[in-house]
Amino acid sequence: MNKNPTTKLNSIAASLGLGLTLLSSASAFAANSPDQNFGLTAKITAQSEDDRDLGTRSGGDVNGIGLDLRPWLYGERGNWSAFAMGQAVTATDIIETDTLQNNADDSDSSSANSNDGREPDKSYLAMREFWVDYAGLTAYPGEHLRLGRQRVRSDEGTWWDTNIEALNWEFDTTLLRANLGVAERFSDYRTDLDDLAPEDEDRQHYFGGISTQWKPGHWVGLKAHHSRDNGSLPNIGEEVDELSKRYTGDLTWLGISADGDFYNRRSTQPLNYWAQATWLTGDINELELANVGDQKLANGSRNVDVDAWAMDLGLRWNIDQNWKVGGAYARGSGGGDDDSSEQFRQTGMESNRSNFTGTNARLHRFGEAFRGELSNLQAATLFGSWQLQDEYDASLVYHKFWRVDDKQDIGDSGIIANLENGEKDVGQEVDLVVTRYFKQGLLPAALAEQVDEGAALVRLRGGVFLPGDAYAKGTDSVMHRAFVDVIWRF
Image 1: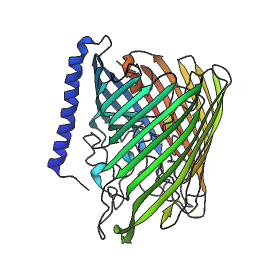
Image 2 (image 1 turned 135 degrees about the vertical axis):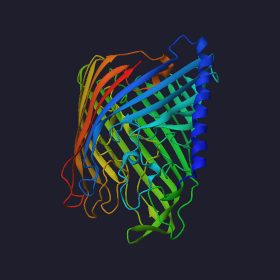
Image 3 (image 1 turned 45 degrees about the vertical axis):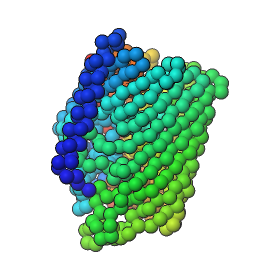
Image 4 (image 1 turned 90 degrees about the horizontal axis):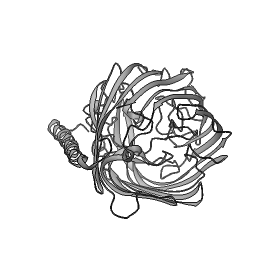
């Protein structure tokens, strides 16, 4: 629902006030810090995107260029540290300058049931991160407790990779890694977005993981995540739009993994592997809809037991220090009936981005153009990559996508078009990502986890998606999404 203007103003003022407080704190800490305490990341992004709706409606194209400035301030004193990063974006179109941005944040909102509470602007201000950190709970240098809006992230990106308000403890040593946290999104801290996404509002996350290195370069681990959505579904007869909740309730994920340095681009092993199995269980209330003319109205809800699973496999051969080839397979279950669901869904904190090709560049696991969610979906992937020292890298990736249950939808994706019952072939895609790095090491060592790249780079990243028979006849046969990023960190 749309917030009261006074409430919105208070929320923005509070978030900016908290950010300024942390900036002031960081300034106080800075006196004892030997590293650089402030800086600016400048990013220019050119985007070309054609037919995300596959020609089924007006719009769906993006062609423009954007400037994204991210000033940051960091300080530390003893075991304490603080960090804040702002953001100012201006562009000629709705440009995606942030790879953590959800598909829904740049989707077409021209439908009859649209709500402008989450319609992005070409220009906006934001607070990306603001947190304080304490590293004195134990004597281990890789242990710390962090409070505030921060990046919570797992290596594979399919569990966690997002900026969110959290209290998060991490422990990272040579033989043991662990994390434990609680998070809830209260705002996007952007001047152009009035409301939270419905799946984020009134939803708490409790999460943790542990992994151990049983021999050099080989890890086994466990992850757990529980989400509790205490929000309210629309009452019977109320109009339903993009900001209406579609389900509430509790969901729990439990995963087990084996990792042979699959996400370590500097691994010297000839073969790297990744295997993960995840179980999902829960009890939710799903909204039922009734179509009345051009309107969608709430028609009550139904209680659904969720029992689903997913798997993710990967294998990479390091031919030499420059060339690598590999493959991957992922499957998220689908199916169910009125009272039970076997359709897997992800935690809601994922980005699905990782460096699975063995380079420094982080690619979308399910296509730079398609950007699928592992929900009623299976994906087979082949890739090859090349890197030259720390100056160049390139990845060429092929994906093939199918539905598991041909009568259910596939969850979130970068395509806005309906699927037809009885067809499983979702489509295929080819991605190309090429990067030239210019210099490294301009950021404080303590901030290495906050950025994905070196200090300066130029990158081409793009994908061409070819829809399969699951999309209705008459839709366009090709969709593309391509970016050129120029990043410089001062």
